[in-house]
Image (cartoon, rainbow, N blue to C red; front, top):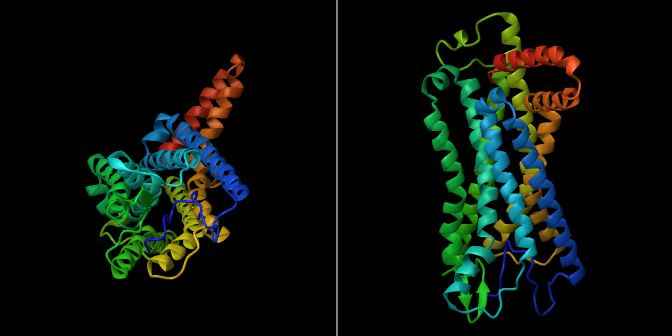
Length: 354
């Protein structure tokens, strides 16, 4: 274990050349990571801008979660680019400052904390939809803005707290070299950390997302009833508003399912690779496959904006509204039509309580 100087870090090369990535490959990786960083940062910033541009849209609970998700993913992409441009091999280090640099920077602690925050932000959003659809009366009676704030704070703290708990003791400067995730007292300790990390980063989110999606789909399709007594009162009202409500719920679920599928496709490869390593299986961190797994994980942070553009009705309606305003800003004769259109869209948004 001690001879491995990195797990998640993708820039250091083995001086012996046995498993090192060539200079050309490192240059290619730098370009790829910078591309992911730029596209992801701009895309998530665009999502934030659209969802924050309308008072009705930005006050909806679902969109508050999505805005929070976009902020996390934008910062993740910015960190991907920053780390790629500050690569170092971790050699010739000494003193407290270098030890802190090793533990808090070369471990990629900030970025892996942020991508974990992104995963749990998605879980928080999914659980919110789950309780709203499957337990509507309890949700209406017990959910408050204070609880929303507490949930978002927990999402932001979870990644850094968990990653710090095992990044810090397992890394450090030894004989002038930064050893990353290598300072374990035994193989058993290493295996335990690996299993827990993969559980919290992959299996727990996968189980939570799958369970919630299946239950919500069954409720929406009417195969099972919401579990709260008196929940039918929530579904009351005129047929057309109820149809709009059901359509909005269905649209949100479809959007979240696409996001969940992307999570599985992007995270599966890296999590199994890391799990095998922690369990003692020989692993080549200079191999093209390993770098593919890391690129896939980082790509997850820049995919979501494209999903929202293609699938999420609230986002598409608000974007059309902004484009319409821009197109009509120079045409004063259309002010009345624009105003009527805006009122109509706001009315639809008010009915879309999901």
